[in-house]
Image 1 (tube, helix red, strand yellow):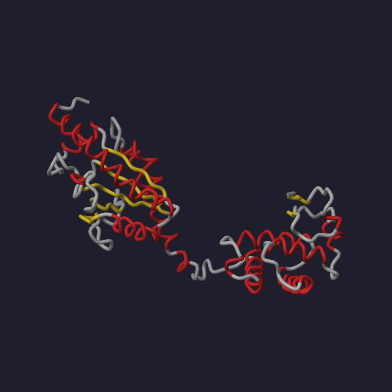
Image 2: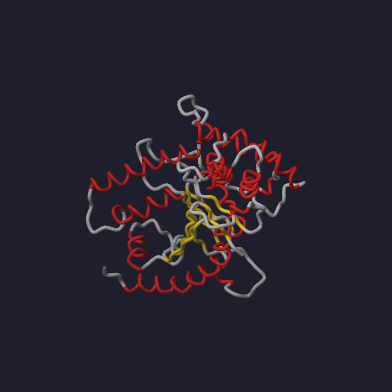
Length: 323
């Protein structure tokens, strides 16, 4: 693509200035974003894209386009958009946002064009002498959900960067965007939708997992339980099944093992303590039950557990973690 010298010169001057701006902005924002478990990316506008943007006539000052440098924050879902916006505004000066108001849109109900949140911000004055000429220079921060970002990456070349125009390809791309918007809404409103009589149901496995979590919370404090309690409960449920026990029988074994040890030791995980409880139980013969041919569950044991001798030797379904 032929780009006239005047535009090339403006781009080259912007390139140097916005490269310094990107270093300052990324230093202030990237680590904070990644600490939240979000994804961060950034770019400088390349010459062909810059020239085409100027030719739209929508850039009032070619020497200071508001998106020459842009970065993107990718969050889990719609509920995190406001959190990311607050994080950006903690570190930068607000200039504008699109859309101006979240509850208003210029789109028709049947329109699914690009409308992700864009913030236009600038560096704040600081006491350092470095890069003071960058104070007030506006750049763009896009905030997207994972699904919005994935759609943009997957369809960008079909819609924006192409040497031809294909109505059916664009149609397909925006059909996908409509479906993803529906998915985003379902995720954001999952709590409310879960109360609908059409989905407010429960299966046996879920019921058992909830029973186990409830019993664990009676004996272990918050900090002693993992965030992923579902996985912990699933692991314990499998061990109980290997002993032919129901989920609601767990408490009795925890109580007996606690009495045997005087306490529930905090250096053992709930899983390890329960395996130990079953292994020492006088109510069931765990060795006999666990060694049945139809039992497929594998259990993890380690040196810190108080185990009977049969669990300390090689066994095809016992994984032993040695010090």
